[in-house]
Amino acid sequence: MRHSKKLYQVLGIISLLLIFFAGMFILLRFWTNGANNEFAGKNERPPVEKPQDKPDQKPHHKPGQEPDEILYYRGTRTIADDAPFTIVTSSAVRTDDKNTQLEIAFSKNINPKSVNRDSIFIDGKALPDSTRFSFNKKGDTIQVTIQPESNSFLLTVQGIAAFDGTKMEPYEFMLNVAE
Image (cartoon, rainbow, N blue to C red):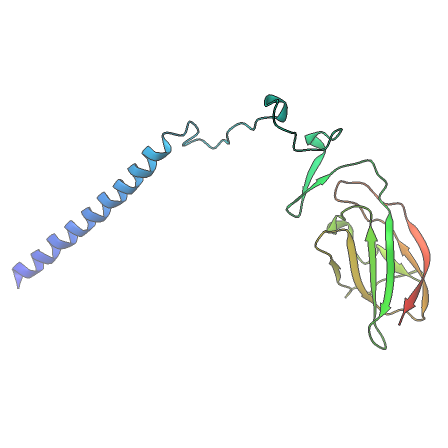
């Protein structure tokens, strides 16, 4: 009985040593493969070559648009430009007896943090607290369900900003509900 207890202790120690050396082997193997890379072990990325460094390579941006004018928005590259931030289209379609789907498309990607219930007014009234906004994949269109009192209403849109920081001038116009 005493010998089997010692045997288990020795086997346990041998197991731990095997695990330790296997871990060290994997670590050293990883370390030596990474040693061939001059940036191994550093928290830096290799320098990015500018297009002008390679004369035979075309630039990744359009002429007249410098790389610092490129913004990253929802996983896509967006060019920051001086174009005005405006409403491109708007529509209101009745979905049932009470509800109407309001869709407003803009000329630039919207900063979702700038959209709230005080951004859109129907006949001069702010939207209810329970209003939920949704955005298309591109990020330039707002969809919201509203309950207008009639088939035509005064729509006011204000305080919305584009992702590049451009503020929109307030818009106010009549909108007819499509059946």
